[in-house]
Amino acid sequence: MPLQTLIKDLYAILPADAVLYETEDLKPYECDGLSAYRQLPLVVVMPQTESQIVQILQLCHANQIPVVARGAGTGLSGGALPHAQGVLLSLAKINRIVAIDPLARTARVQPGVRNLAISEAAAAYGLYYAPDPSSQIACSIGGNVAENSGGVHCLKYGLTVHNILKLRLLTIDGDCLEIGGEGLDSAGYDLLALLTGSEGMLGIVTEVTVKLIPKPEKAQLVMAAFDDVLKAGNAVANVIAAGIIPAGMEMMDKITIHAVEEFLHAGYDMNAEAILLCESDGSVEEVADEVGRIHTILKQSGATNISLSQNEAERLGFWAGRKAAFPAAGRVSPDYYCMDGTIPRKRLAEVLNGIARLSQEYGLRCMNVFHAGDGNLHPLILYDANQPGELEKTEEFGGKILEMCIHAGGTITGEHGVGMEKINQMCVQFSPDELEMFHAVKAAFDPHGLLNPGKAVPTLHRCAEFGAMHVHHGALKFTELPRF
Image (cartoon, rainbow, N blue to C red; front, side):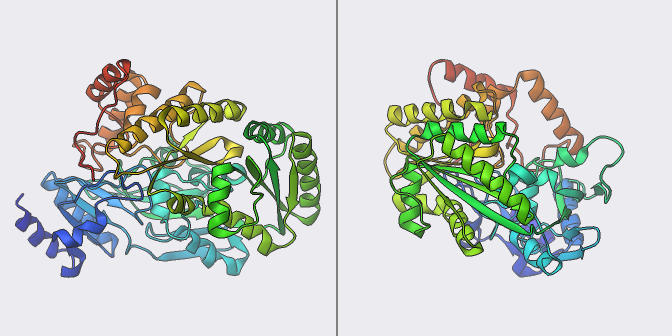
């Protein structure tokens, strides 16, 4: 379909200012939070109603035009990278909190609603939404569903998939499906879990029913400093082995501590090789007991200094430093590459050692900050994209971290998704037969492959190419994507 014909047909569905096609208007949509890959879409559309989305999908389906859904653009795996010959479907204006039911402890929200806005709206009822990504002030719930996002409190309260009950979904041909239900369980296959984390490849989410939980009576944070990263890693395992499931358990290494402290002045120990943040929440009595047990375990694990938050402001201040780790990285390096892998907790010290060796091998600094309690690593590789070859070297370094996670018994993503960034490592984690099954699921929802094509699940041909180059210590280039 010629572009002008497409624009004319879109104008019949949307107001003129909701259809963008001039280069300067498309530029803000060329990448997501991972800006190493950029691509201008053919056109951007910004619907305000579900009916408009239906008509857009029907138009694209009839003319075999690819569609890439986009939320707030905070993704970190290239999952919302536009298609050069496709429509970028922005859901930012589909952003109403439809209803809050304080008795059922649920909220019905549209995909463009910010994560934090749900808790702000539920606060009047003494409730909140538990998953809290570091980008929660900006990221949207639709994007959280697409990537199965977590956050610092996912250890105790779970990822997005554990905190939603129902999805309203549009298929590529515009049909409306309701997946899940208001009860604790639904009959049939668990399609809710299948769709959560599907990265916009199976359908377009137009409404999410989330669980709300009561605000705890008290929360207190234990901050422990260690003179050895491996001791801190072992301390994490010791806390969990004692049968304690903290509300959150986060870890930062020395380079991260310094970057954060110089940026935010959170009160971290600048002499520490690693800092562990461990939070307890619940009743006053429960918190007092659990904090005491955690304090003892951390001391026995080799902590050199332990502090307890004395009030809510201090607790939030300690967490603010952790949540500012990514922007802090931007102050100490021209560019950074945020990885996301998950490993068994017992392999934490081993993998951290491996990352340190790779950092020396590649001559690139790496900030380690992660959800220590569930083994979800977020190494931030610091580099300069203006230096020829440094991005490619950084990608190779990142790929080896992910493969190390696989060999340690883990996986290549914890909450950021696969997108374009990790598509080659999918070839390492999964067999050809498994990948064929993934493609079969995709075909069941989207037979012509129009929704977010080329993401998350590699073709077997691509895996064959990657395997051949991997054997010869090469690095497969994303030849279909332009670089900057």
